[in-house]
Image (cartoon, rainbow, N blue to C red; front, side, top):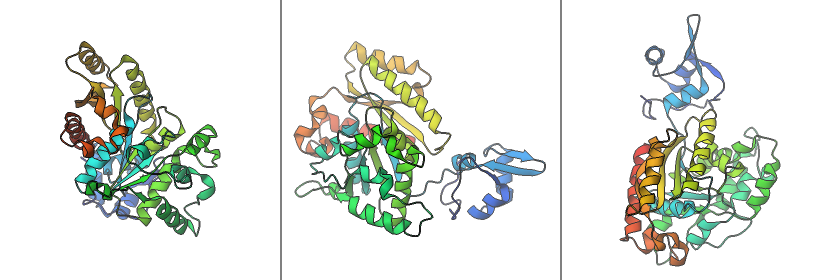
Length: 350
């Protein structure tokens, strides 16, 4: 049983996943009684370690137990293989959420920059996700100008999607596009003095202090498991992995799942929200064989979504439509399939 933001008040303490905390420290900081926490420890709902008569709780165990996420919910769309439709999924699902009233920020970490193409957004090379990850533009949290620097940077980077004559939902979508500069950062391993994987997490944490109106963030990632994808996993709360209907696609899924297991040590908020088949066609033998193969692999089986997106040319040639498919053809089979995928993802992400 997880505690919600109604059960505890988040204080000013920044929990370190690797640090040990006393029961009293956590009870006082989060305004919950020691008796309640002791009961949770004794029933093993909360993992802890008894030293003499005193309980000690590891930071990551507290984070996993409390389940309290500050700031916008972060969805990561990733696969180690290309051709799975990550960008198309990301853009369409984000727009569907905007249609439900959410204010959504899209972050493109794929140097190919497909999100800007899908959303008809011109790209200014000085206003991309590369700036979020560039150490020269960043300041440590203790620096006196930390908040002001981030406010200036985020204010410059948050770009509304052009939506004149389109669905009003696009007015609730913002994009920080990608640029080829991301390739240079990735090849150089960011040349950071801090661990590479924390860059995006720091940027998103700063966003919450300067623009609290963003409800969700959807991150598109490159078709590999390099530093850019690792940044997304470190910052994310829910992972969706589209995969193409081919045996080769499963290798990418398994490598991604292995990486997620490693990152849970450092980001206990991260959960797998689903594996979604693209190019599906239940009339073919391969469709059934691939799904059955996944069901037989313990690392993948629990996350396979029932919903899938069909082998539809219109869906996978979305840039030619000039709008995300769910806006260009809202009553199409593919648009309805995307809604079904989103419904399952949201159910798993709760």
